[in-house]
Image 1: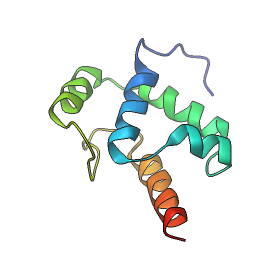
Image 2: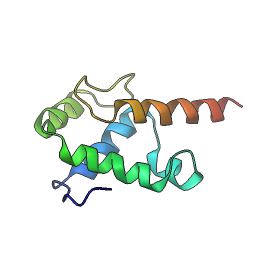
Image 3: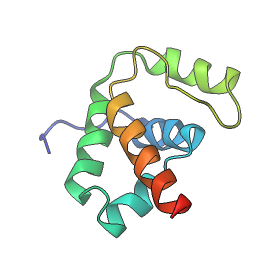
Length: 92
């Protein structure tokens, strides 16, 4: 993890985006689907993003389950991975 400070609300934005995708990132980090460091890196990446206002507006306009993140989301790949792994585990 970098030594930069998270912008206020960054972790909330990342967790809100994860919730809309149906990706439980906290469960993923505690169950070993991703490492706790990967979760921290996702929060840091979100904190370093310059699109927080757009993200807030997107989440307000996209309540409930979503198929994809906005194009500017820096955690798209990771969130899609967590969702895919958790969907596969649920189907087994």
